[in-house]
Image (cartoon, rainbow, N blue to C red):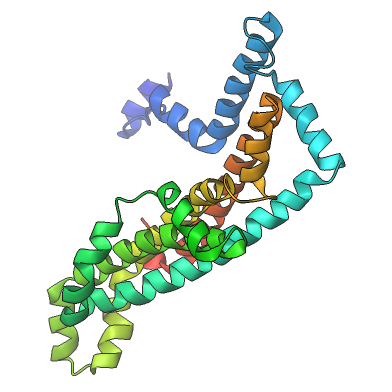
Length: 273
């Protein structure tokens, strides 16, 4: 009847959304919760089945008990504070240097000629390979941790900033110069906005790498921190604590990544959509 009425009125009937479109919309809204619930359910089933020993693959409730235990005895809050401080300081140092040098290598030919080959040589060196060197240079104190984290963040942010500055469309620059823009105005109103998406992409990636390199730095020569606590749990075969610490690292990284992503959306709004 509805179709007949639509034909009589000369209007095309509105088709119901396809099931795949509905699924995509639903997944975008609640997909993460469903995914986590599904994985947690499978994990709980494995724990209930007793297919694997607790010392090898702990059940979710064992991991939760270990988390509560570490929180109540004060080790987890203390380690969180220490690790977040190290990650934040290392990230700020590395990101500041990366953006500053990327701006120069992207627009100044002499600086690019002198530094690019050397910096590209450093990029494949993993952070964990620098831990022994950092300990020799800075000792087992905080300096070695800051160095490892800032090194990793610096190279990532530098590369993205350099790439964004180097490949600003020439048509943008010619348009600005034809309108009589000064060098400073051209840099602030044309070059920086065009390169900003690349810069924020590097910063966002740098946040994730800061946590990765932090764990590598804390595995050796540390007496506090999440990485140190992971190493300690391995020595005592406390896989429940190891799982708890890994999950906490994942949650921290995801939360910080989300915050940086939202800030980037607000500041680089012209690139959205």
